[in-house]
Structure formats: structure tokens, C-alpha cells
Length: 112
Image (tube, rainbow, N blue to C red):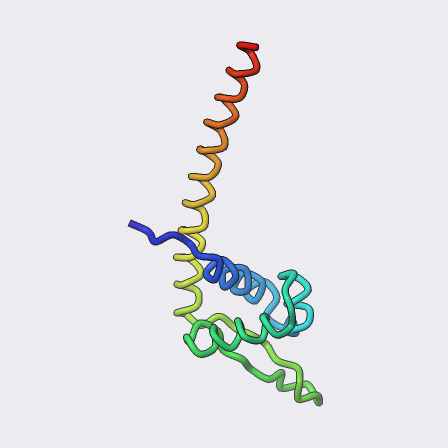
């Protein structure tokens, strides 16, 4: 069975999804998109780099040393797929629980 998706994993999934769609995003824009601090974004990116899920490359055509592309590694793509699957499973469970609660509330309202 799947492990529950932690808040930590959910953050990593969001970062991996953003990096896959926008590999040349800078850390400041990434932080804004995630709604977290620049420090947390840097910490998360470093963790993904350390795990081998993301690699960082300089733009060869750039004169600025600060322009990087964050690319998902094959391991990063595999991990993103696993995180997505766990996230989807959790969201379906939440949806089913919410749906049952709504039905219960509808019955309570109809009885009153």
C-alpha cells in the first residue's frame, strides 16, 4: 500500500511540478508560486538536489552566473510520479469522506 503523503512530500511535489513545467524559473519566482519564503524554497531545492531528484545547470548562453535551469533527473521523474499517485489517492479519499458528510447533512436538513 501507499504511504500517506506528508506536508513535506506535498511541498516537494509542488516544486517538482513547477520545475518540470518551468525549468528556468529562479528561486524568487518559485517561492512566490509556492507561497513560501525564499529560505524555505532554497532549503527544499537543496534537499531535492541532494536526493538526486533535480540537477542544476547554468545557461550556456548567459553572461550572468545566476541563471540556472533546474532539471528533473530520471529519478526525479519517477519520484514525482509516485508522489502524484499518493497525492491523488489522498485527495480521492478526502473527496469521498466529504461526499458522505454532505449526504449526511442533507438528510439532517431534510428531517428538520
